[in-house]
Image (cartoon, rainbow over all chains, first blue to last red; front, side):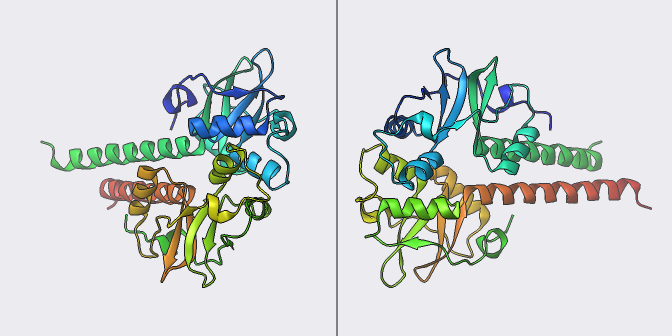
Amino acid sequence: MHRKIIPDIVQRLNIASVKVNDTAYQCAKIMADAHISALIVVDDNEILIGIITERDLTQRILAAGLDGKTTKVGDVMTANPDMLGPDDSVMDALELMQTRGYRHLPVAEDGKCVSIVSIRDLYTSAKEALEQDIKETEAFVFGDRYAV
Amino acid sequence: MHRKIIPDIVQRLNIASVKVNDTAYQCAKIMADAHISALIVVDDNEILIGIITERDLTQRILAAGLDGKTTKVGDVMTANPDMLGPDDSVMDALELMQTRGYRHLPVAEDGKCVSIVSIRDLYTSAKEALEQDIKETEAFVFGDRYAV
């Protein structure tokens, strides 16, 4: 399976981002409005410096009893997150996510985020690739048996 | 693929539960401590009446600017959630989750929750089943070509 993260799994996108001085409340609103579960955090040069997810908000704000309206992104984000490159393979990405328990990984190029991959994207792709393998194997089998 | 939800995907478990008068803060703490992303809501007879997830907490508490310490589970849970039965098939469950965008489904028997299934559990199982299919097809192919 030699699929690459871009373009086989996800496309280049303008990923919604926040900055360290934005609040957890603002993050939650962006996530809710866009129906997404992770946001990247960038500095003033648009360089990727962190990631913040629904899980972070649940665990580090609500479970900690903090006020979402006053708590800053910089205090609850995961700084310097693991990232993928556009040319990384699907299997490398799946391995990294399964080993470390991630559900999202940013895809970066020259320090800037060009896309984000969820474990759901990867499972869907792995499933499609396996189905394709089965189809090809079956075509081979039936071609062998029923062709002239 | 004729795998059943129980026992092929998940086992019967004592699922962590909350009640309608518990607070969102208590939910978030249970989720954070147990590293889980969904809790079921039961009535005084332990009958399943709702589900609450990290996404609900993010969208309905944080994004709404509510106070997690005073907001009750009953006000933010998804009431009367879709459920699976122990004998339902994996493909039915995957279909239901993909169509409606769920990431978790409770498994209920006689109204009581006996397990919970995540879309990750289902993808993992679908992947394993497909890999098994490939192995069997390949065994058939090579058996046909190289056996005496």
